[in-house]
Length: 100
Image (cartoon, rainbow, N blue to C red; front, side):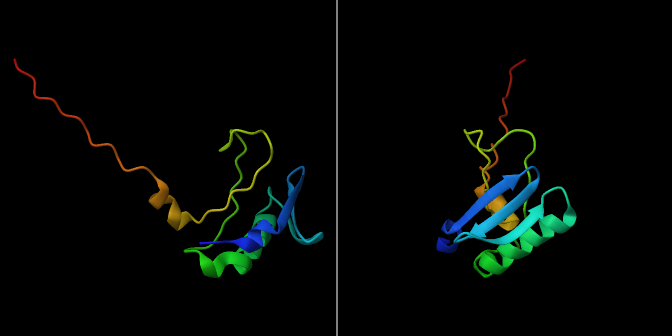
C-alpha cells in the first residue's frame, strides 16, 4: 500500500502542540495532551488515509523512550488491527525430560 499523500506533509512541534502542514499551509493542529487535540489529528488522518487502512488511525504519544535510533521527533503511522500481524510469532515452550 502506498501513501504518497503522506510524503507531502510536514510536521512541527511546539511543546505538546503538533501542527501538520501541506504545501506550507497548516491543515490540522492539536495539543497532544488534550483529548480534543488528539481527536482532531485522528480525524485528519482518518479523512486522509482511513479508507486505505484496516481500522481507524490513532495518535499515540511515546513520552519515555523511542522507537528509533534518533533523538529527532518522529511520527510513525500504523493501525491497531495491523499490529498483531507485525508481532513475531510466539516462541514455543521448551520441555525437557529428565532422568531420575
